[in-house]
Amino acid sequence: MAIRVRSGDVGGAYAVLEVIAAPRYGVPLHFHSNEDEIFHVIDGEIRFRCEKTELDALPGTTVVVPRGTAHAWRNFGVSPVRMLVTFTPGGFDPLFEEIVGRSLAEVEALAQRYGTYIIGPRIGD
Image (tube, rainbow, N blue to C red):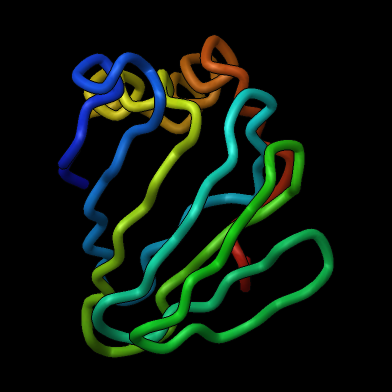
């Protein structure tokens, strides 16, 4: 993950990340209490789960996840997936620098400090 627009540079209005997800990579089911999250798929195909609905997103697809919505995503393909992810408002982006090299338990505790709660496994686990 690479932070492309830091929330501190735009008065906290939003943050933009570029995510490259390797095959089989995914994030556990979670929700954000403070921000909406918008995904725009650039390359590859990725599966999203929003609440109880799952969908496969191709390049050009945009998925909007309002704050408080349980969601997860995972790359089930054989090629990397590339997408832009926008958080609005910003303020969540410093977490990505803090989690490098951390265990899942440490990541979960750090995420809670930012109002994000892991509530289930990755899609397919």
